[in-house]
Image (cartoon, rainbow, N blue to C red; front, side, top):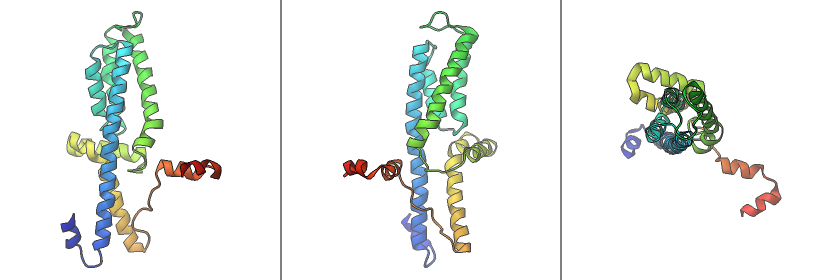
Length: 204
């Protein structure tokens, strides 16, 4: 990093230092968030598979955790082996469940887990570190599949976010506008600012 800053033209050292810091924040936030989501959703799959009596619960949990590293498509793919196993087996804990009914229950339960992840977990764990529209992320993932295989899929989202950051800098320099994003507030800071004064008094 220091070498890049020193190699920057005169007058651009500070911008280079800030750019490297912003890029590092994007990648660190993304990787940290994905690891946490992977652990949480892997554990959720294990609990779900155990309670519903799906065979190979540990395998399904590991697969679900790994699929979290594929944005948008990963959680849906994690449901496929669980539903497929349920379709051709019977529940080991709930005797009446088997075949199509068993698979349907698995799909419904996993859909609820996915929606909970999307609404509750992702905003709080990953937050706005990438600030990309889901459609943009999906296009990036599909592009990664066609261009670079699984590795490109894994890094597609942060790469697009990094490219946007660089493009924003170039555009800002050309037009005389702000070249770096305004500092983002954490969710806790935003909640505190929305609280009444008497409630906020307890924060100090």
